[in-house]
Image (cartoon, rainbow, N blue to C red; front, side, top):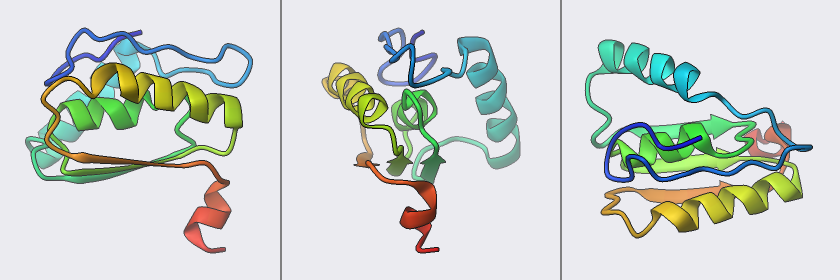
Amino acid sequence: MRIIAGAAKGRPISAVASATRPTSDRAREALFSTLASEFGEFEGLRVLDLYAGTGAVALEALSRGAALVHAVEKDEAASKAITANFDSIKSAELKGTFHLYTMGVHRFLGD
């Protein structure tokens, strides 16, 4: 897996095999193409990635210029993988801010 577009284009993303089922490059490309046709560029957008898994969707949005990205993942091993993935792309000229929350989605949303 890799970042598809933006400042961190081509950088690899790793996954914890037992903890996540990563969004494939093809599925992410289709998702972001659909979102871009609906909302335009990602510059300045705020993104919330619930059940983040590998963080691929959140980090893709960050690479494409999102201003603020929140990723929520309950699994400790997956959260460590997200942190490692962020560390591998943060040297790119990212414009936004990234926050990772290691907790359940219901707790994050205040239910």
